[in-house]
Length: 502
Ligand code: 4AD
Ligand code: MG
Image (tube, rainbow, N blue to C red; front, side, top):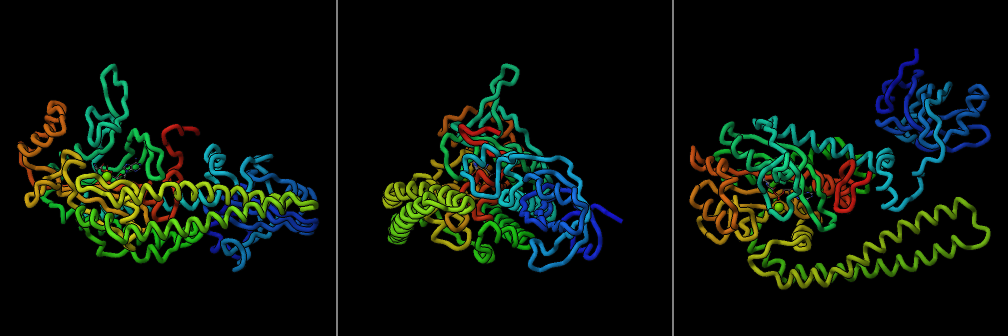
């Protein structure tokens, strides 16, 4: 009996004849045998087609099949520890579903721009596959955490008539001639749900007109936001700590191989256990101005300059080898691919080195009252091996809804959670201002009109209680867990300024 099975399940079928339905990932052909690497979305499997074992036309077809042809391949399953995925298929039959020629993405190296302009096809490759699967698990872990801990899922609107975060990053929509925005957060609506149901969360796409092209910003990203009634800052932070720890543990449990394939040092993630570090904003400011930040950046400059020199001479050497007489074509191609990768690394390092003096200046002259910038967060987060809570920011640099600290009215009862290893902020959260007069005062300070927020102010008029919550960005979390340099790889089709195709 031929049953169609998934590559993931091959271990249950050793010795049996099965059919795989998939696509040709790669192949290697000699006069007597064709090795077809087949992928089916659940894994890769080497399918061995021996010339002596199949009809002549099957061997002929197998030998000529183009990369990403879709196919059904039948054969017996052999366990082999050395094989990709631990199993091999010894082929007896082959049906081509769609023969493909000239697939644009080869197993060789391509430049990142080229790959993103072919994102719809690139998704099939191993690296995006590993990242998308980690993303899937992160989202599952997020939902499980809240569902298992008594939170009610509450969907908040995407059409929003007023700003939830800063007005500078609003996207305008024409809503039957009325001005309207795309939601930057579900939080304000979620607060009303928390006062109705106690513990709630929303999870959806959020939109911010981020004009800066950084490795941490998208214009469309997914955020999960819990909101809790009868909770103060410390209670909310404790939830954030358990939450992040649970996501990390789940990803470690299910994706060790994917993380290793991506080059992530898994031991870094194994260190992510409670308690996380806790710093006040004022303490963070001291660190930025102090000797540890300076030493870190000086050391960076040294290490990066050394690597730049190494890459430059390496590229020159590889170019010489590539252009030498009598070099075999496959060697030439391999060198060309390495040169592309080296050039990309070089360009990135050169830019980083150009920026280091600015980052040093910014840190050394950091003034109390300013928000932490991206480079400041990077410094703080690189000086720690576990996530860091930075709390009690000056109220002027944070959102209007955050609760003023009764012990020091210059600051609010908020926190950002910075991931380690330079990944920076993955969570922003706070206790909310629950006093009507204090909130009105704060809105006036920000020149916010009260009219569009009357419903929000009602929450302080009728049964107001201490409450708070936070928002975690899925893409930044996945980038951190996978050890990626840029957030754009963590979502199927990233949206950034000037980048919407495909
Ligand atoms: O710190 P933020 O702006 O907080 C809020 O929106 C609050 N309303 C959340 C709350 O208290 N309910 O954003 C929260 C998180 C950030 O820490 C970051 O992970 C992510 O959302 N984020 C972005 N991710 C990708 N691209 C962007 N442009 C992002 N802006 C924020
Ligand atoms: Mg924030």
